[in-house]
Every structure is written in C-alpha cells, then in structure tokens.
Amino acid sequence: MTLAVRPNSTAARDVRSQLHPYTNPVAHEAQGPQIITRGDGVWVEDEDGKRYIEGLAGLWCTALGFSAEDRLARAAYDQMKALPFYHPFGHKAHVPGITLAERLLDMAPVPMSKVFFCSSGSEANDTALKLIRFYNNALGRPEKKKVISRVKAYHGVTLATASLTGLPFNHRDFDLPIPGVLHTTCPHHYRFAAPDETEEDFATRCADDLEAMIQAEGPDTIAAFFAEPVMGAGGVIVPPPTYFEKIQAVLRRHDILFVADEVICGFGRTGNPWGCQTFGLEPDMITVAKQMSSGYMPISALLLNEKIYAAVRDNAGRIGMLGHGYTYGGHPVSCAVALEALAIYAERDLFTHAATVGPHLQARLRTLADHPLVGEVRGVGLIAGVEIARDKANRQPFDPSQGAGLALGRFLHKHGVITRVIGETMAFSPPLIISMAEIDTMVDRVASALDDTLAWCR
Ligand code: PLP
Image 1 (cartoon, rainbow, N blue to C red):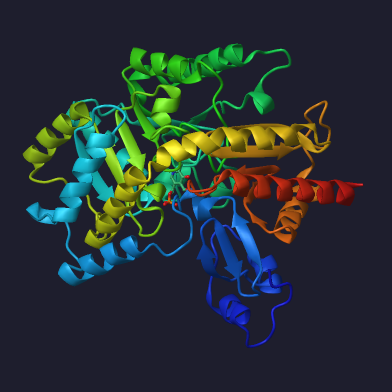
Image 2 (cartoon, rainbow, N blue to C red):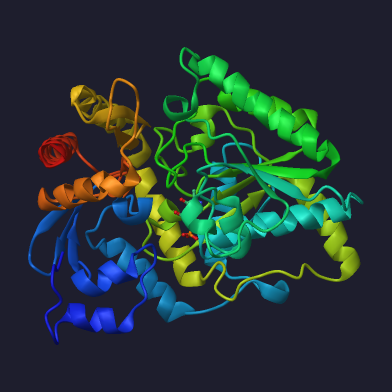
C-alpha cells in the first residue's frame, strides 16, 4: 500500500483519475491505491514486488487463482476471432450462449427451465426482481409485489438490488431501500441469538419473524424471498441447522417465490457444486456469476423454473415481447471463457478438491478461536469468517470508532494476506485451487496479524 502518494507516480495518476468503489475517497487521496501488477496461483504481487496470499479470490470469484491459463486465453482469443460480439435480442443466438445455457441447466441443483444471461450479479438479481413483477402481473396478482431479503444480505448495488442488500453503507444517502423491499432477521446465531437460545430455537425464531412480517404486510402482497445460502459480504454468515427448512415451509405456505443468490456460493465454494445442495434449498430462481468464469470475464445468469417461465412466456407473448435485456448479457467471449472454466473445473475435479481442502481451512481457522481477540470462527467448505470481539466472554464488539477492524486490515497487509475485514470479521474465500500447505501459510499469517492487533489494542 502506497502510504504517501509520490508526485507523477502511477498512484498519483490513479488518485487524479478514478473514483473507487467501496473506498473512503478522503483516505484514498492521502494514501493512494495498492496497485496489483501480477498473479501466480493463489498469490498476487503489488508494484513494490511484495507478494500476498489472496484470501478472498479477488472478490470471491477467481476459483482458478491468478495465473494466466493458456486454455482460457485461447478460448477468449478464438471467440474474438470467430465472432467478437453478438447478442440474444430479437430471436438471435450464438453457439457459446446456447451451449453455456445447456451446461447450466444440466448442472442446476433443482430442475430449471431457462437461462437469462447478464453481466453482473446485480443485473441477474435485478432481472429476477423484474421477472417476479412480470410473473405476478401475468397471473393477475398485481398486489403481490413486495420482496423480502435479510438484514446483512448482499444482492447487488443497482437501485433495486442495493435495496435488497441489507447493509447500511448501501442505503445511507442513496435514499434506499426503495418501497416494497423488506428485511427480515439475519440468521447469525452468535450475534443475534438470545443468551441460551439454541441454534435450532434461533432458526425457529427467524422463521417465526418471517411469518410475522408476512402476516403484518398481508401474505397476498409478498412476492418473493431472496437469500444467499451463506451470506458473504454481510460477514460470512452460515445459517444455523434447520434454518432453511423452516424458512422454506413459511414460503410454501404463502405461495412466495424463493430466489437463491448463488453468486458467491455457486460452483464449489461451500463443499458442493451449489450452496443449495449444502443447505437443502429448493428455489424457483437461481442467480449465478463470479466463479462461473473464474471471474476472468464479466458474466452472470438467472436460472428460472418452468412455472415462472410458462407465465412469463404467455404474458410476453400477449404483449408482443419480453421488454428486458442488456447489450452485453451473454457476451460470446464471456460465454466461451465460462464454458472453458467449467470444463477445467470438471477435468481437474476442482469441486472435489475444494470439498477436500475446505475442512482443513475450517479446522485451521478454528485453532484461532482460543486467541484472546477472536469471538467466533464460522464457515463451511472454502468460505469462512473470523470475527474479533472487544470482550470475548460477553461477545461485545469493538466500538467502530476504535478502528480495530482497520488496524487488523493493516496487520494482515503487513503479513502478506489480502482479505476483506467486514466490520470486525475477516472474510476468507480463497481460490478453489488452494493447497493444504497454502492454507497453513495463510492461517499462520492471520495468527500473526491477530497478535499484532492484540498488541495494538493494549
Ligand atoms: N450477490 C452476491 C451474493 C454477491 O456477493 C454479489 C457481489 O459481491 C452480488 C450479488 C452482486 O454482484 P456484482 O458485484 O457482480 O453486481
């Protein structure tokens, strides 16, 4: 990290030219960016030549890490040469798009009927929101339009998907959430359970809270419920046992659609190909992105079941067309790269590898639970969170003004680990290719960063 921006440096050019997402611009003007120049497996290197283990796979996306894969570069090159752009609007199609749609339908954890391509997770969730409205209008239920997500959910940043997102930074001074988006209880036992409330009792309470919200709003007004199998950007929150079973019973009782946001969990992250399989979800729609192309090209998709497709088809047929689509949705180069990435995952049996090394990550991180600063270690497969606490015994968090999360971030940087500290939780979601030895290296470095943070606190 460049601590002072040298005049005429690349960092100075950045400060002059870019507004950065999820960055404090005042701090950025003073300290400048950390410029990453190259990658190698699970490692990246910055312009000062310092190497970091990439504990978050970029933004939870580079399943294959950061080395240039000849096969993926070749897939992009060949598609660029053959057909650099085409689109699926107005009855057009291209072969990589058709093949990728077939592949996703084959892989889907529950029967799905159609795939709608977009370029980002936000666009895929926005498309889900729009089709949910379209579906209920098609069924003559104009009142059934509200959607429910959860406190600490992350579903994107467009006006509508940032509204679904349940995090204060995404709402504050953006005048969000928009009307018709509600947030129910976050299923984080450690933070939100009452003293002595078991995980299963807490899961029952979460489902009861959802039921109460639906009753208060009127069941005929609630169209859909959105959930990530494991909540990622909200701080890696793993639902307690029986949670989704109980939530899905409520949804079924009130004819509420269930959208599983697999943008992070999809493609092997939780120890199964899909988060839906890890937690027994039976959604009506699934959104995917990120690891679908190992993050190397922008591509996302919404998968919808036959019930929704049939209603959408009939209504759009009556209107004359489905008035929705993105110029870059299902870009042929992105489709070609995603297909090749999925082929590599299958050939290298990468999901099995992730399922094999995942328990090692979980076990090694749990050795940190004894550290005086660590409040909770949680996770499943190759996704995990380590939350620090000011008062471990009483689960008391640090006051944000103390800056403990920021200090921890600085010490992780010093020890050569890139991750995201969300509030006071370190998030881990390394490339799926990570080895046992690399997990050991990462966790050892995290332990050193915790020791430094403890010394800083005292
Ligand atoms: N859904 C989930 C679960 C995510 O984690 C993200 C991004 O991190 C999104 C949706 C939004 O995706 P994008 O940033 O590609 O719009």
